[in-house]
Image 1 (cartoon, rainbow, N blue to C red):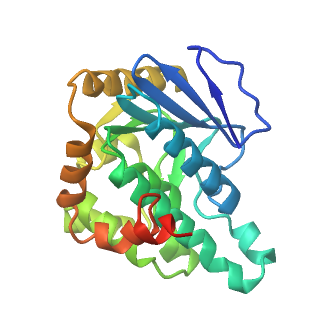
Image 2 (cartoon, rainbow, N blue to C red):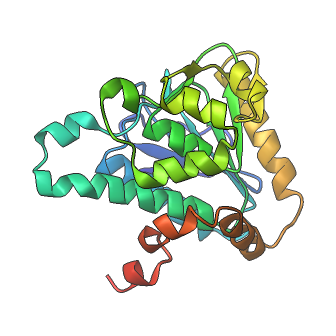
Length: 251
C-alpha cells in the first residue's frame, strides 16, 4: 500500500495511501492525497508496513512522517467504524496502539512534519514522535473527544500525560477541546518548532532536523531503549501490539 521512491522528488501516486522516500540517511513517509488521512485499518496497516520497511533499510538514520493536503490526520476513521461489524471495531484501536509501539521501538530518531490539522488520534500520532515541526500559518492540534462525546483511549491519555507534562495544558487540550496553533503549542512546550511559510518550508525544516539527528551516529538500539525507558507508563500499554512483540511474532 506504500510505494518506495529512491529519488529526492519522486512522482507520487495519490491513489496509494502513503509513499516512502529516501534522502540520504533520512526516510520520509508521506500520507498521500488531499483527504483527511483518517486512521482506519487500511491506512494504519500501510503506515506500519512503511515503518517496518524503513527499519529494515541499511543505513537508515532518521524518519520523518508527513502528509499531503489540509490535514496531517483527522483521527480515527469513524466512517469505517459506522459500517464495519462491531466485532471489528477494536481492530482499529489495536492497529494504532501497534503503530505507537512501532514508533517507540524504532531504532532511529523520528520527526513529525505537521503541515495541517492534527486531531484526536492524528494529534496523538504527531506527539508520538521525538520531534514535532509544525506549520505556523495553518493547522492546529486538537483533542476532539470532549466535543464529540467520546471517552479517551487509555494509551492516548498516558501518551499525553508523558508528552504534555503541564497539567493546565493537558486540561485545555482534553477537557476544553482547545485547538492549539503551532505558535501556542511551541509556547506551551508541546511542539519543537513553528515554521513560517508553506508545506515545502515545513518539510525542509523537518528533514533538516532529522538530518542533524541522523548525523549524530547514535546506535539505533540504544535510541529505542532510552525512548521506551523515558515513557515507562506508556510502553507497557502498547508494547504487546508492536511489530517486534513476541505475541505478534507468533502470529
